[in-house]
Image (cartoon, rainbow, N blue to C red; front, side):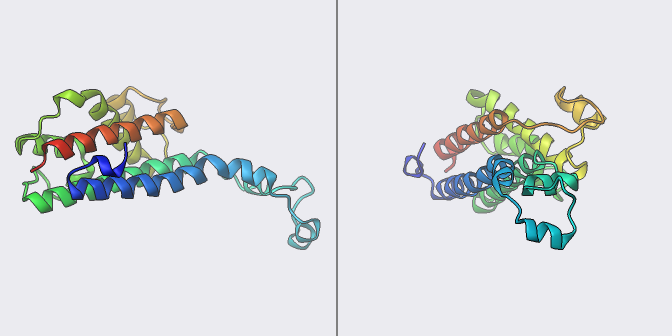
Length: 194
């Protein structure tokens, strides 16, 4: 889908913003480990810094300190959901839609946003699987922000995913499915918003 496929300027703008931001963030997430393995440390720098003999690449250096490259995918999800929140806020502001329940943090509670938009006349029935994927994305975002990506009982109960006490792994395929689900949502909003 291309930006020119959208009629609604607000949705078009958010489509482009999300696509371009996430192409860049995703690129870094999937390439960082490979690039660090290719980045050879200058032996004089290594000696000057007092690094151990086994540190020959930036990958060796980062893993010596416990850097987890999977955290970069967590940051992709955090940023992705934040972009969606910003789009929701713009929609509710532009069209004067009412938020429901607790206004604080409303836009990060995906199911409440969908309920409020449904009350405003948006029919989501044709994209339910995409809504389910996006709801999962927001659940993942929550544990990535508040639990450094470690599965807790609440996340497991809400999603059926992961093992309590273990890091949640987000694959490239999972992430791309979430982005595709968001395109489904944006296309539906483009078709149904005034």
